[in-house]
Amino acid sequence: MRCVDVGAGGGDVAVALAGIVGASGRVYAVDSDPLARDAVARAAAQHGAQVVALTQVAEELLLPEPVDLAFARFLMLHVFDPLVVLRRMRQAVTATGWIVIQEPITSAGRIDGQPFSFPGARHPDLGAILPGLALKADLDIVDCWAEAPAGAGPGPIADYLTDLTGVSPEDSSVVLPPLVTLVARRRQIRSL
Ligand SMILES: C[S@@+](CC[C@H](N)C(=O)[O-])C[C@H]1O[C@@H](n2cnc3c(N)ncnc32)[C@H](O)[C@@H]1O
Image (cartoon, rainbow, N blue to C red; front, top):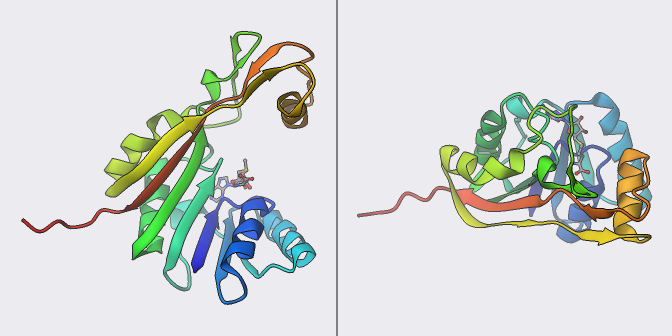
């Protein structure tokens, strides 16, 4: 399979995908930040993974070949126009290809009952409108769901939050922002 991870960052997902598609597959890791290319190259070398890192803005996504899977995680909340990016991802896949996107609903997360905020993001609650955007981008939704780990006290939830924010939640109740996963395909033209 050929895949693209759009907004790949340090390449965690791209490297994992490379492990799945194997030596006969190909994974493109696209990010607007040129420094990401070096980070992806380092991660790929460490895992012996075959990843092609490209510096591109997602709004102008253009790959050397059609792909079977276009994936993005924690990207759409940052871009100027998520619909433009969705349409580019749709164009990037083959007629039978898949589009998989994971985006948060930031403000639905809670620490001690208080909503999360993410002032640095353009669309912090993008996950909440992802299914409707998919329809506007001429995609057929195959599946879509939201999931949010929750907990209190020491453990993986507190560790994750501390890593992310640098602030420990101590014994507060934490509900991480739900992550909406969209699994979609190019809209099929149905015969009458
Ligand atoms: C929060 S990181 C997510 C990284 C990775 N997808 C993950 O889930 O671990 C967001 C990434 O999107 C990239 N990015 C932001 N706007 C972009 C755009 N318009 N086009 C391409 N990449 C973009 C950033 O440079 C950053 O690496």
